[in-house]
Image 1 (tube, rainbow, N blue to C red):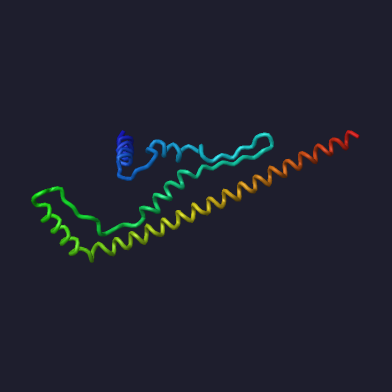
Image 2: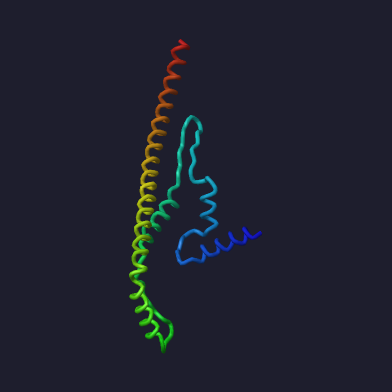
Length: 160
């Protein structure tokens, strides 16, 4: 029971996060767990291949836009009277610990950049692979059509 509660808590956190998406977590999980987007079917001597890259493209774009971590974010306070003092203290503290935080942020940005580049390479290779599969399937379908024509011609010759 605890695992189910943890999963529900994680799902609620993801759904309520600041990252806006056009799909909720359940729809994303359905897409990831169900193999409904990639299909290869053979019907009536015809091979069809379909792969929906919409989700992959969406998350690659999201990753590309969010990979850079910014050390200097705006500091603000909602308090009217002591708000300026709070902002000043936070800026002083940020400057004092800059030498500690900046190397970590640079390392994180380097890691994020390499992961983003890797995902982009996978995405690009997937598109190329899809094009190769589609062209191969088209060639196979045209070859099957030619074979069927030859079979008909052989049957006609055998009938004579």
